[in-house]
Amino acid sequence: MIRQQLNAHTGGESNFLWRGGEITRLEGFTDAVFAFAVTLLVVSLEVPKSFHELTEVMRGFVAFGVCFALLIVVWFNHYRFFRRYGLQDPWSVFLNCLLLFFVLFYVYPLKFLFFAMFTGGGRIEAQDARTLFMIYGAGYAAVFLTFALLYLHAWRKRDALALNEIERLRTRQGLIDHIAMVVIGVSSALLALTLPSKLVGLAGWFYFSVGVYFMVAGKVFGRRERSLLSKKRPTSVPVEAGR
Image (cartoon, rainbow, N blue to C red; front, side):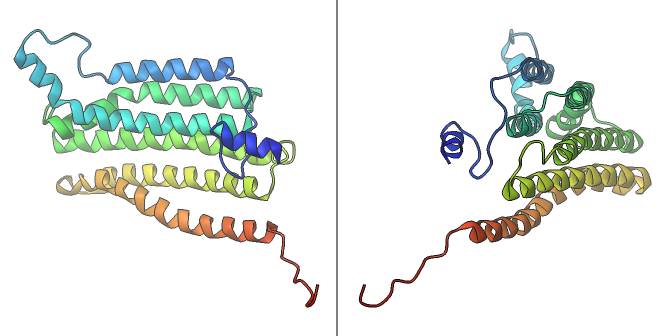
């Protein structure tokens, strides 16, 4: 109980004991790589020297914000996983390095896609857009497949980690969530590959299904978690009359 209270007080999750202790070299290295990836997203590394250059930089503000948000989502998923389970075995290290490889490799496709979308720069033909959506979909799927493998690894170590029922449920949820993201990424890439040129943009709109999935999954897993919590609550003992 004391460990659970300390866990919640220090920024952990309620009903999930974070097993990660001090920040490890692996996490420190990962943070440095993510910081470098964010640097690569910057519109321009040089300070604008004229008002025209400033306006050109500001045109990319929204695109940079979207790319930055997507990287933060990936970073937070990584942060939460290693705080939850504290795994530092060779397989976890390998998957972590694989994740960083995919993040760095796909920074430029990510930047190109959203800067073209929001700034109108770098316009591409329909066939090139098809290829770009296929590349982005493959990268999206690769990143979340790596997360799925990490959660599968944690699930296999559930006994060694002494996960309770709630923690096991959230581990399964993490695994299923990331598999769903892989399916969405692969589906988008397949749409880009097979749709007619005039409809290839639907491959990008398909990512709105991410929000729909999490809305449905949140309700399903939330109901299961509330059911488990209700079973753990002590039942009240009726007081006899006259006592």
